[in-house]
Image 1 (cartoon, one colour):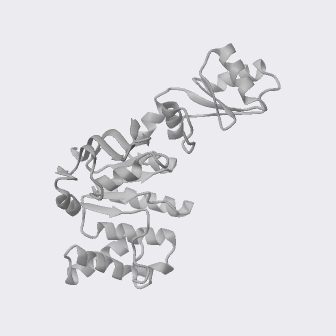
Image 2: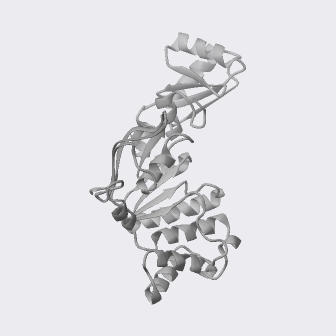
Length: 307
């Protein structure tokens, strides 16, 4: 499949600060692609550029072959956008919100009402069509938002932090909605700081300080080290770290007061560890790497930790 979105050496500066510093990736047609990163990583700036709300300083970004800066009107005809902050008018009903959106796209009459009713039905809010959106739960409002974004049948849907503010059940529900969009062949790009949301994407670009630090399928990125992650709690983490590094000659780090070791066959290493440092190991866990472990490996810090 070809690329629906193509970003090459993209930069964006705000005065002396570089929010994006040479970002390159592509989004294939029909896939769910995630931009995963902590606050300040560059996700929102990149989202605003792709939504034609902000011009890049250098580099290029195209959506379905249209340049976001030189041909922004063509890009807007092809994309649906759902922002993190709610854009539904809380004093309008769910149906009225969609009809009003349709008018802005030149839609009208019976065909507009059919399309609006179809989307409300599809996203499970048809029974709330006549209710003011201010009375809906966060999860239901998000469904109305996505229906608005799809009203004009865009080929590409951009979602900025779609599950922000939603409870766990509503986040799971949102993932089902995204899966249904993929079945329809809609290309979906989401920004997120939730690891589990990044893990459900077909591919993910992990951003940090305006750069792509990892790019690929979530499961491939997590498995690339071929090791287990061993986390050890100790009363003196720094002392234990130094002892492990000297005895076993493996990379060791301390993050948030927890000693962290990546090593293959971690279940075999734990008995050696406990025997070698009696009384120093209070608790130990062995787990397969996650996307956060990928972030730690590439940046040297945890996802939410300030640099």
